[in-house]
Image (tube, protein in one colour):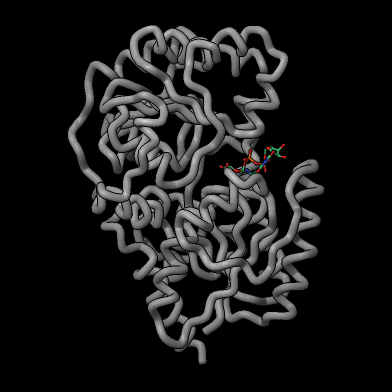
Length: 366
Ligand code: UD1
């Protein structure tokens, strides 16, 4: 069986690691990696290939930047050509990025079955580009690999046939275990930044809804600056966020109170998270990684796809995206850290399970 896997953005390099290593250990399965180039800076892309020992992609395009339509359209054209040349049995896509949508659409129109990993997530906010990408991908996919019960229910509510939906757990948990089960893999980033266990918070911000509105971004940064009066706050700056804060006086004043660094690699981030006191983020992945490492989280968005974490008390959404409401959520998170329960995301063997489904499905159709 030949799988062509489309990746393009930072979280996809991390997710791809779990399956790529499982495929490498299996006989009769071949994986061809295609990197759209949506993320292209060394610290947004190449560092993950090195850290996670991901194979060099056979197809490497340079299709980041531009408007959503331009980016998706150019990727669609390039991926179609690669699919025609490779004739894979399955086109596998991860998550909710423009690269996910381009890959699934190109494959579906060529009648190549699509496997969607992280299927069924919904924010119910169609103003997010990611929500559009997820819905469309789920509706053209043949295999939908759901990470949670909630995701399975979301798909059922949209009329997607049960037979195509497989609850396999979360591949991000597979990858997080690389460090949780092997603390010796932690890096020296704490020493480099002058941090010690539980004396700091870690934050990441990159969502378009936060970064494209300088006033809203300043509210978030001011809440982080206030927290920085009590504990160190480390903020690896995503390129989109860096663009918005450059030249913004409010944001600049707030950033001066924090430790701002360039985006970091997988093991540095896992190390930072592993002993942090708190995470404050708008990332989907980081909300869960914080949980896997036993760190409470405040998510600076109006909604989250990972509702289990809110129900379990590990994650808090501020009442609104204002400095005051975010500070209140931070206060509450620091005051009442909850107990641990990772079962909501499976057992860290999602990649194995999904490969079994694909192999069985493939032999069933021959
Ligand atoms: C994308 C995904 C989002 C995912 C996130 C992870 C979409 C719609 N969004 O958002 O689902 O959670 O990746 O980070 O696909 N840039 C650089 N260097 C890079 C990468 C990007 O300078 O290496 C710049 C781009 O030119 C752009 C901005 O950063 O101006 C944002 O990049 P973009 O590809 O739009 O995606 P993200 O915001 O990262």
